[in-house]
Amino acid sequence: MPDTPPPPLPDTSAPQRPEGGPATRLASSVSSTSFGRDPEGAGVPYAGVRLGLLLAALVALGFANPWMLIVVVAVLVMITLHELGHYLTAKRAGMKVTEFFLGFGPKIWSITRGETEYGIKLIPAGAYVKIPGMVNIDEVAPEDEPRTYRQKTFWQRLSVAVAGSAMHFLLALVLIYVAIVFVGGPNGSVADAAVDRAPVVEEVAPGSGAEAAGLQPDDVLISVNGNPTPTTTALREAVAPVRGETVSVVVERDGQRIEKDLSIQAYASEGERLCGLGISMQRAEVETVGPFEGLVKAPQEFFDVVALSAKGLAAFFSPSGIADFASQVGSAQDDRAASQDETAPADPEEDPCANKTVAGAVSSGSSSGENRVLSIYGLVQFGSDVGGVDPGALIGLFALINIFIGMFNLIPLLPFDGGHVAIAVYEKIQERRLNRRRYFTDVARLLPLTYGVVILLGTLFVTSLYLDIVNPIGG
Image 1 (spheres, rainbow, N blue to C red):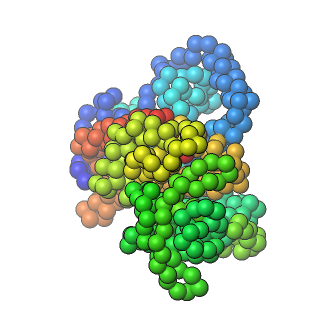
Image 2 (cartoon, one colour):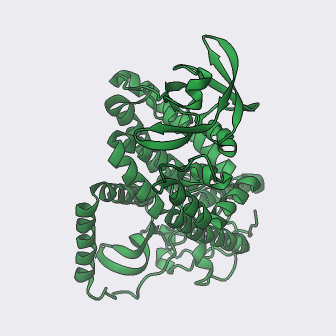
Image 3 (cartoon, rainbow, N blue to C red):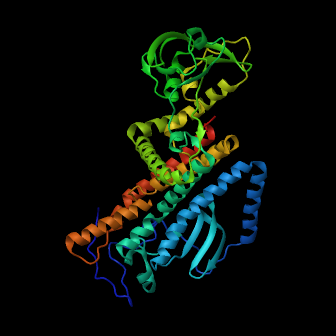
């Protein structure tokens, strides 16, 4: 990592700003706290009116869709707790905190208490706490230098940097405990709900190809035309291209594997004509665990979900994952149209297996959602849908979201919190290696990479929002 020779450690009476490059307004944007503020003493015109309109909008949302309001409030709580973690650890370390805002952009409302301005801004894309001197190139008044982030000890800086993610992880642990002890989950688990289940037959539809082939409840589908089907998603993907055809299906029954020829044909279900295997899959039984067992199982579930989230992040940011996401964005309009065609009322005489494209069968709705990230808009929409169907599942979903956000923020690049963690660790290593009391990283040299990350995040925000609007998960 680029570095700069450290200056003499400043004394507490007249501290010096660490060297490393010109302290410019542009450079200060690498700090997670640097989104600007109004001139000292400037107010927010019509702040009361703006705040009133915001509260009125939330009330109206509550009447129109209560579950959506619950999700919005939950997201606001998550964001606030993240920044509260930074705020409390900074105060504990003796750092100066000048701003604590929800949102970015123009102010809607603010109030100053002591040395900190608290408020709400227009764009609900996150929140921030402003701590002077997050990096060596931040310009800080001499009298504030002793209370800057950069002048504190390694452990104080590290605690502030990780506090936001730590709050997410703590909240996730509590939510997981509540979910498995009081609400219940598949096999008494939250992690199992995040894993695609095995394709085990629960019912066979009359008049379907599955009935003609002799499939029975509790049969496990092993493969279709030689393609393994370990999960229900793999089964859907194997069947979609061959609708209207006869396929070779291997099922496991009573410990033995049986091969059958099965026609992917039209059949009737609840007054509708559908095309497919003609089976419904078993769902895991919803169970709870005892309060004391939950104290042991909740951490286990937490680490299981952390592993799943890490795997998901690695898959998404891999070359194939990025290419897949770009493909979803490029074909969003076509996928949405195909999804609407499939859900449109059908002619009773029309064969539902005829004229169905692979894209319509595979890429519509939620089937395309396995390798994508949700925007805040998509999260609110998806969460309100989940709450309307299964309120208990919403608690598990919030736990998953907190873990994902906590891990995402620890990516070791600026402007993520993980970038500040990486800098603090690097500086500590250099101090020991060079036998110096204090070492400052020259963050100015990291600006090109940081701006690249910011552009990538902006692109991801816009494309994920577009995808959630045009082709939302669940159709």
